[in-house]
Length: 206
Image (cartoon, rainbow, N blue to C red):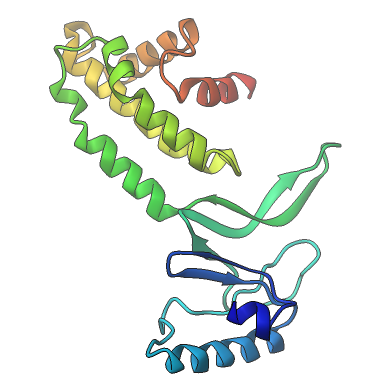
């Protein structure tokens, strides 16, 4: 309400205590930052000294320079990225992709599954156990700039290969053979794991 009354021309988004304000110039951003600091102080609050910053959204239309050119919000990193339009022409736009913090959290979650200790399970058992979680990651973090998620999905396949090495004697101490085994199953049953349609379709198209 305060923003609508005092700065109606500046769009903003808020989730919990994370806020984005979209300014047209550095001067406007500096003035808003000072006004927000004053408003927060009136409420007995203060802006976070490290997280509160002015970011320049650099792309093909904004080619200036500025110390801060990216930011994280809701598990995404917003920064300049190379993209392709409908006619196949490449350009640079300022867009979101899964953040490093989010991919680190995903890898920690995968590690917590302790796949190598689940040698009593079949791969379709693992799919039933973990597909709901994987599908959640895909639906959220795969919504924008999907390729930023590919290294983490490939990491999951490598974890499956290590599981296969523990489960099957013929694959023990044969990492590359185990990785081929995972890839072969993905080609034969591409929908078994929730991330395979995206990851292996991309790999096959290269």
